[in-house]
Image (cartoon, rainbow, N blue to C red; front, side):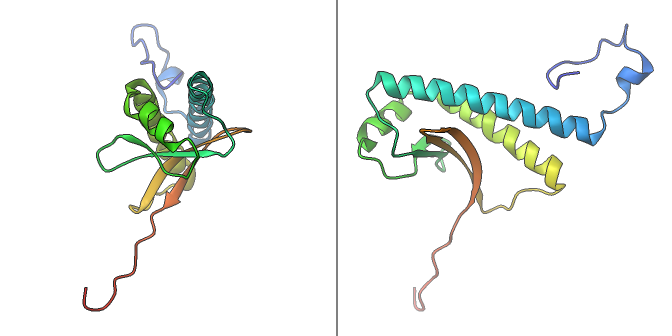
Length: 145
């Protein structure tokens, strides 16, 4: 049963109501995450092409502390990319869905939560999209600051 459906208790058998084994759940989550990743990558590629924004170089997208999508990598067309991101609420919503799915995939496979200092990133490359978690590097404090 897909994760987005609830069993119909009137017609469900006992076997239908038993919990999924973790392997099935892991596969289902990964499939959903990879499907959304491909879909989001296609949408982004089409929207970038419509604005004559080129890849390569690759783009790294992540959310800022306000939950807004931002460009996190250098690009010669950074100004146009930021303008596109600032006005694209649908892309931001899909990005957040993707982030949540990949967090669930990580937790189901690793059996542990992500470190608090990790950040979800979406890479848009000429070979296709990729999703990854990046450790946030803290700047060392200098004595006296």
